[in-house]
Amino acid sequence: MNKGILAVVIAGVVGSGTYVANKVMVDAAAEQLVNQVEDSVHNVNDNFLDIQIIKTEISGGDVEQEFAVYLTNGQERTPEPIYVTHNAKVAPFGLKVHGQLQLPKDKGLAAEFVKEVTSFNENIKYELSPTSQHFDLKSSLTLGVISDRHLSLKLGKLSLNVAGTVDDNAGQIIIDGAMFNENNNIFEIGKTTLDSVSSSTLHTADLTILNARVSDPSTQIAFNDVKLNTKATVGEKTDVYYDWVVGSLNVNTPQLSLPESTVGFKGKLGSFDTQKITAFNDAISNNQHTVAEDLLIRILGDGFTFSDVNMFVNDSNVKGQLTFNKANYGSLTGYQFESQVQNAISSEVDITLTPKLVTKLGIPQQMLNHFWTIDEANNYTTKVTLDNNKLMANGIPLQ
Image (spheres, rainbow, N blue to C red):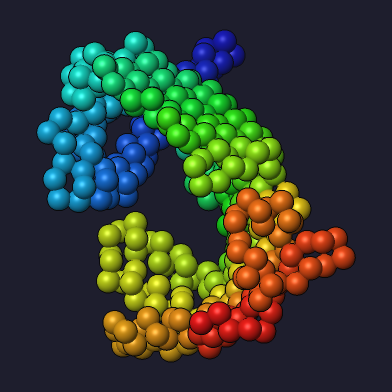
């Protein structure tokens, strides 16, 4: 056979094979994507959301879907839904999927909502690798200002970025700021960032708030430089670590004035049986309330400890631990259950208060003389213990 003809034949066979392989892989990726989306919709439905699939169309590597998202309280749902469209395109050989979600603004709740705001724009895009199940989601939402005669809400740009797999991912949520004002009752928050990491052995959530304030005609509370770091380590046992600090807190109320204070809370909560914690979360997600209640009683029965606790306001602090001891709650109900819970709690904490804070709190001198001592730095100190439902301060019963 002529070499030229042979080359054309081979090229034709390879081209046809490539076309067939590409079509098969693209079709398979499209079907897989639709199945995953439908499974996700099924799993999301709970006491707060009712999501209905209105339409699903697949044309080669193009996927088009529409959903109706109803808000619900578990019994009744909103008359009108928020409509969501999902459009995706599968790349050659099914190696990548590029998708976008949109909220049609000509129908449903979005149509009503858009009448009330100065702007309403969303941008939700993702990239997915069907083989590795790695995804990269980038989204943003701008709502502008909602207002009427007595109320106004201003929400800055909201951004959400998540990358990884379902079991191993990192995400970030950023809110440029928000302000709610109702009859001069104001809540205002500056730039807020939530960074999170999730894997089979570690979960972290780091919340940073640049500033915030709550005020009404008689109350002023302001926060600056807020950092709330939370970490959970997961193995056979799960432990949760807290490291929360408010760089500057200003409180001015009729009951308390606390200017320019640094406030913090640190501690470790554990150790929980991971299988029981996971089963409890699954039961809650699936509205299995009886199962969740039974698991919670078993988790309480195993006992846990809140250790390395350090709560502080400037140079005043509370340090120590609280233990929820093992107990058999069995079929206890009502008063018996409450009594068993109270008897299971034991605690030992050391409290140090500066004279300035003692004055701010208005602790009576008689109580200071009876339950407190003064250390070398002229701070008031006491040790508070709770054991067998007996509460004592500096060895003196408080009950």
